[in-house]
Image (cartoon, rainbow, N blue to C red):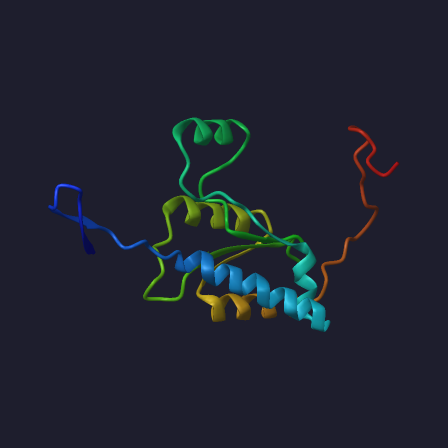
Length: 162
């Protein structure tokens, strides 16, 4: 903490701004994945089908309530890879900063990973950039999941293909 002087001359303590280590490392992961995609590597194939679920962050009560009403759920993993590989439907990746700067996994996050795992998705906790890279490399090295039989298309909704 730094002490500064108020207009009265009294010392006032201010907290140093905190650093979002997890966010910084996750940005680095996505930047790396984008670079791998541009290089044409196997793991880079995950870049176009990987997205971040912006569940975290500070919000006021009204915004939080509105988002919950719109379907936001506590514990949803940070990154989703929308590619079926190795007999799995896709990958849910809960990302934490590299120890010792990581945060504990919340019970809602653990529950979400278990839910994804039970439904046939890869569900992984990665602590840090290097572990997350290893997870993505291993997942993208798995063979594509093959659909057996006819693929079903929904007959309801507006046809977006037109």
